[in-house]
Amino acid sequence: MAMKYLLPLALVLAPVGAQAQGFDLGEIVVSPNLEPTALNKVGATVDVVGTDALQTAPQGNVAQALTFVPGFTLTANGGLGQRAGFQLRGANQNYVPVLIDGIDVSDPSGPQVAYDFGHLTTAGIGSIEVLKGAQSALYGSSAIGGVIDIQSRHATEPGTHVYTSARYGSRNTADASLSVTTKTDTTDLAATVSHVGSDGYAVFTGAKADGVKAGYWANRLSVNGSHTLANGVKLGFAGFVEENHGPYDPARGATVFASQKSDTGGLRVYAEFKTGAVTNTVSASTFRILRNYNATDYGASSFTGERQKLSYQGAVSLGAKARLVFGADTTRESYVDSFGSSFQRHINGVFSELSYSPTGQVDLTASLRNDHQSGFGDNLTGRLSAAWRPTSDWTVRASAGTGFRAPSPYELYAPYGAGNPKLTPEKSRSFDLGVERRFGKDAYLKATAFWLSADNLIDYSNASYSYIQVPGTSRRSGIEVEGQTRLGAALVTATYTYTDSSVNASSSWASVPRDVVSLRASAPVSKKVTVDASARAGFGRSGGLANYAVAGLGLSYAVTDRVSADLRVDNLFDARYQLVKDYQMPRRSIYVGLRAAF
Image 1 (tube, rainbow, N blue to C red):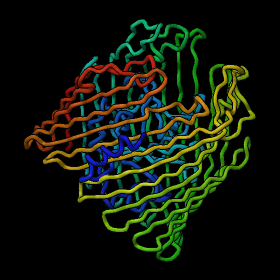
Image 2: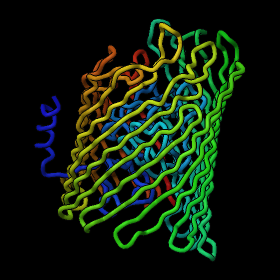
Image 3: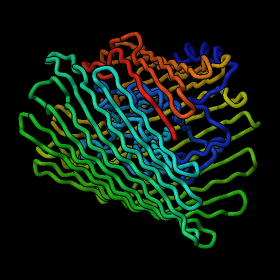
């Protein structure tokens, strides 16, 4: 089945190269290994979403920007502000931790520990790395399907700089942001404040739909900085606070919560220093989310989740060809609700990673981690990866790893008998093999085959009204193809993902479209005008969902060297489509805006 689509696409892209956002051979990535590593020395599969893709993302939403990453599938209950889950190579959000500036922002207060992408706009976001495959050897519990690592805008250029944007459009949608960065030889600091609001639209289309609009607003402040002391010690921090308000499952009447307001915040502090030949990093982070709901059959209710983490990491070179990274961390997660339930769990981990480069063309990495929780004991996970560069324009990558997901506090101890304290961790294995061919600076072609399986999956049983362990194995396998080239002045990027979801033991692993394609193009049409276009489509969908195709078009006009005006049309052809059954995605939307940098 995959070859039917893969071969024609490969022929079309044969003269080009691959990687969704345009990698340089010397680009540094931070998520695939325990230390920052040059991308062409990484054996794991990682995609980078850069500034251009974030600025032109549909709806100005991070999740929409990620839909152009091969293997990423969005499952949103409508537009911005509505609940937005996702799958990465078929593993849903419960199995993919999300980090913002090193802070794990997955919600401990939900039934499963997961991140809701419905509220995060692109304002103040610098770049995103999407690391695929089982990564528990690096990131511990829940990293069964991969990791999404989001970095805020940092101060990268000397001096003080101001970046601002404002936009207005369909459904009385308005957003604005202001970022300020400053950098000296020893200090850097960045801060971003943003707001978004919209009258929304009638999202729910099911039998109980009553046409209520899903209005929404959110405010966010994020900051980060560092200072290097005279003795070489580097002290740094990153943090954010956010509040948002909107409907929850709108138009379903009083059978569920009618509106919600959530407040979230996170902070990470760290110190980097050397002791002899060892480079040390000590860090502490905290994350808190408070969700309040009203207008329900049960009155108002609230849910609070917290996470605190302490970590130490050391690194030392073992001669000229090898480097060892080692460390330990401890994490506490807690859950409290207004019904009188409260749970918590502690997970302690030790880890190590050995990198070895036997030649200038080969880089090998072995990672090992053990996590201990009093409820289920020890879990040992590992990962092996290799990158081989037979020539300067070819890279072959291979990675194999294991992962696990510890039962969430809610799954273990949920009230009314739904919790099951006998649950054990879910286990996974993954493998991928890829090859990349570059053709100069902008053109490349990349193909990756992947395989992921999971056992002991946790699901909710409607027969026993409780969480249970599902026997059997669920598997995902497939192929990702990415290509980019220049056609005249236009830079064109295309992606294709084939996923086989036929082996599925548990409903908790929802199926994904069999075939997903995307296309992006950007071209200057004059010295001042740039046009960008995008399209994406999904085929072979299950659960009664129809195939879909949606396109967008943008126009940017350089008013001055520092100021630009933008016009953007999302869902250009006014398609009716759903990513979750009975929840309509936004129809055609038009926005105008200004962007400036000083």
